[in-house]
Image 1 (cartoon, rainbow, N blue to C red):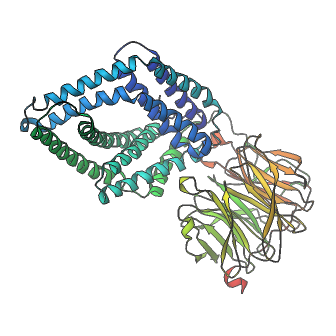
Image 2: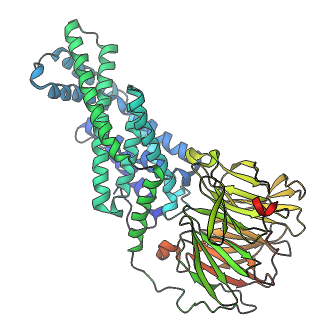
Image 3: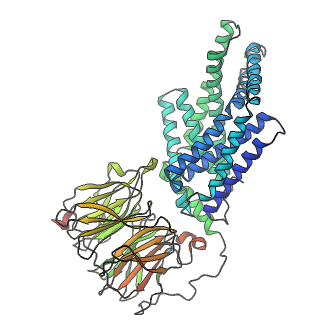
Length: 612
């Protein structure tokens, strides 16, 4: 079935759909029963659905595997295209005659129709003599099926598909605009491809909200059909003009071309009207709307087991010597992140990134609350020397939060219009190293340095996904996490200039489950790294050797930080609170540990007014 199911992990659903479509294609091509045109047509439809699926999870597969899978299904469909295209041209001529109605006698283009029928028969004869083509395609598809279980689907939730969905919708919207600027066959054909991929995606998501998603899929199907018929007119015109060898009157050929142009114009007008409605939203808004449907759908799943957090309550105080995570607060954060101690207020702050929610916790009283709602995602923040907070947000925006009022210091960055900041850290001089998420079209993430006077400098421009950072106790080494590449890097760090040099791999987690996420450093020079989708916190020695692993009742452990007057309390955020049944009962919660070691103090930023 070409749709995701509510009770299955998304990673399982992705692989189930892929193997199902491959099995169907193999069955259609391996059978000698029924109409060969129909069997080839159905097999090619399976391959198109597979291309739609791999586009949806492109960020999970990675560029190399995506290109391999997409090329496999594309090339297989192309090798089988000859017979189907020959049949499609006959159907296109019939549709053209139906459109003409009484304006044109049914036998006016009989010569062309007979030539197309003979051309189809000839194509079938050639294919019959080349059974090796079908065998080659079957071999490729069987090999592809064996690869599916190795697809590296890291996320089981919305994160696995949101980038692919946004990319396909945005490209379709852009291609629609091009059709108004360029009345060109190639532009309409490119738009049709994007519409088809979005149609496949709405089919995959149909169970999320059947009435809504089915209606959307039906309208996209209608739009795809209009653009398909429009493309058939292009193929018919080009084939007749390039290949027709039979004698035909010039007036008959002219009448055919004029009729094709008339029908094509009619189809384009209808397609543009429908496209305006289907692509009315901005890509971010469209994806956020579907994400809301998804979250509501997943929240309806009944719990399969009693909560593992039963009896684990916030006590307001840590017990010295304990190593088990202690629940402090549960706000159901989708992406709880960035815990940071505010030494002047004696409070801990943390965020829910996509929701733009900022929270704080006061250990002395045990009180915690949401203290601010930003107008957009907050990727990270620092505590300023004057006590304000410096928020790093979407589009490269940076704001200063003081007394509950947000004032933008940087409105946006041209290079980050379709991205957001993800993790940040102040250095000893008050600068801020700030990393970003990858951009659209698989553009790498980046690491910047924001200096006190407000200049922002590019430090690294080939990052998979910028994440946790920290400084060694002697301030000579800077650590940086590239989550997508599953490694933590170490750099030589010059405090006077803020320059990083001599990069080397500190820890490589390629052979371990989950991704390294946020991190912090203790006074022994050891690194504490959260493991996203690994359900744990890992301590590494200064040489990169694993020393300790602490398990959490949440799959997505996102970030640790040392806090408190003695910096002996280790606070840890988690994500996935919108889907606790799959992500764990502690998903989206804030935890605290006493690990018996003191943390390196986090530095204060001195950017903007407080740095002058």
